[in-house]
Length: 231
Ligand code: ADP
Ligand code: MG
Image 1 (cartoon, helix red, strand yellow):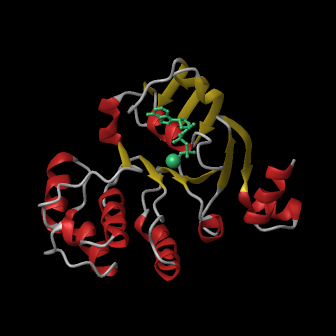
Image 2: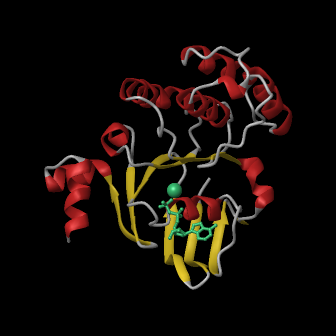
């Protein structure tokens, strides 16, 4: 599903979280959203998901204006931990299944197994890393046309991060999907990204095809990004 932001500005008090952002995202692509802490990555995802509204500008998801009801089309892994602590892992999965028409129950249990998580554990018993994995399962088990992942690898150890990134492509099978991954784990996700979007103090300062930037700059995405930051 295509996403179109035009001149989007969002302020908290008198501070800009996003400043005049215009951006087109297309179906069938995986975008990496990178930038320092506080640069506006999460705000951008929230605005696409209709969880917060811009002060000015327009946001279209598909051909509809972004609003909360659109979440039925958006699989969204948020930066927040919003679990019901007394639920077991499987209760959470059945709950999601009841909430989202596109939820694939069998796929959820398959991914859970691949991640080696015990479905009978209560959420409050899980380590931070395993909570992160459950959040991923809940987002990836949906066949939503838009997938927004806000720091999906945070709290996971390097070996797990690597294996999850390798599996992401098989879990994200929906061809018409638009996937946006906000992350600091640039090296880890480089191999699966089609395009990279760099934000800095609320503005999009670069948007590039990852393969092209590697050919042009003869650098890895991480080194290219460090270079962009020094300019
Ligand atoms: P990132 O995800 O890149 O770290 P955020 O989008 O979370 O950045 O934040 C962008 C800016 O907006 C930061 O300066 C942050 O402090 C501010 N901000 C984000 N959410 C809120 C909020 N709910 N209230 C006040 N300021 C906020
Ligand atoms: Mg963030």
